[in-house]
Amino acid sequence: MNAYLSSVIEHVKTRHANEPEFVQTVEEVLSSLEPVIEKHPEYEKADLLTRMVEPERMFTFRVCWMADDGTWHTNIGYRCQFNGAIGPYKGGLRFQKNVYPGIIKFLGFEQVFKNSLTGLPIGGGKGGSDFDPAGKSDAEIMRFCQSFMQALYRYIGPDVDVPAGDMGVGAKEIGYLYGEYRRLKGAFENGVLTGKGFSYGGSLIRPEATGFGAVYYLENVLKHEGEELKGKTIACAGFGNVTWGICKKATELGAKVVTLSGPDGYVYDPDGVATAEKIAYLVEMRNSGRNVVKDYADKFGVEFHAGEKPWGVKVDVVMPSAMQNDVHMEQAKQIAANGVKYYIEVANMPTTNDALKFLMEQPGVIVAPSKAVNAGGVATSALEMAQNSERLVWTEEEVDKQLHQIMDTIYSMSVEAAEMYGLGYNLVAGANIAGFQRVADAMMAQGVF
Ligand code: GLU
Image (cartoon, rainbow, N blue to C red; front, side, top):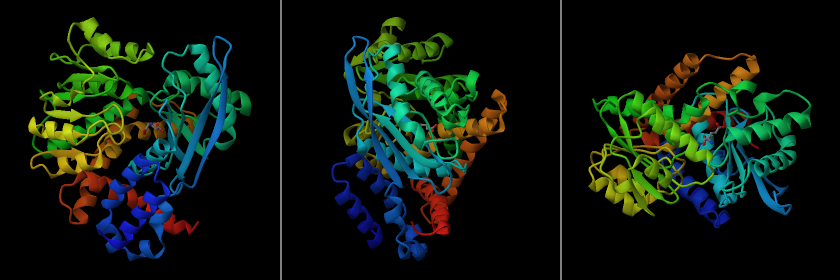
């Protein structure tokens, strides 16, 4: 590999030795940039990459809250304002017990490139807490969110940093967070958060957007192969918002999602998660706070495989949509052996780097990267920000039309970027290069800091 790129990767490995997820994403992205760095010696000259892998700012804060039984608890809150060169920092908050700086930083780094790919004016950020929402009452979640916002509100704003949801943070949490922000600021600045409820400035289609966007992206890939979505079987993981959106759109377009997964195992529904009742049940299951997918199998009488992941199921399209590092080498081999043609990442970094490389090398397997496939979520968040600043509400058709166009553009920009650097049809490298280019131009123009 190019000596400059290797030296930046080595630097990150040393400085972030205890943050393997961050090192992983930096290696993945930077390894795609070789032809770009060679064609543009000015980047090395300005040592642009060493700055790009360092968050502009990252901080922690104490979040104390009282449980219903009167006991006090203290969690750590995080916000990483990774790169603001092309717009206010933008990215979700993750509430999950395994959250630590390495997770926040990897998500923040991915977000910079993803947000750039949308073509919209949003920089990259991420945040969250090691708070575990599982089994907490509504009142506990509200007190936690209020305390979290008391610590964070000074550092965010509609033109500064705009958090949203991620795992463990949905419309309910965003509501409590916004209520506290409004109370503290004494102003209705609802562009400070996205993923809000519709009644106070949320965008129509935002809840569905990540899943819908992923399906629109998939349609582009299928079209390239002369195929269509109709009749395809899809294996999904997870059973949250994203998977729900995929089920909805895939069903509408005649495809079938046959697996869902949770921390307890996976379900196989050969008829597909394809009726309004089944799709609605996903939301109910997520909102129950139980965090188990077996409930679906019990309710609809389908197979449940305890403790297993769905990657052994024979399908046309695999869409890992649950969490990071869900697919390792062993599962990648299984997927390839099953003759799966389309490997479409949806969750942030769902594949280990060696597994991703392996799948990309398989003849006949097409791999699409999550930072492009799931970008419809944050893109629609940017549309929500636009509506908030215009003080207007766009129709469902308008938002969906824009989302669809954005996904088509992300796909074609990725294809063109890879071709331009002689990499052929490589959606992974193309997304990294296209995302990089815009942020790099903006950073170069704004001087060294
Ligand atoms: N957490 C989502 C993501 O990974 C959404 C972020 C947002 O809407 O700001 O992109």
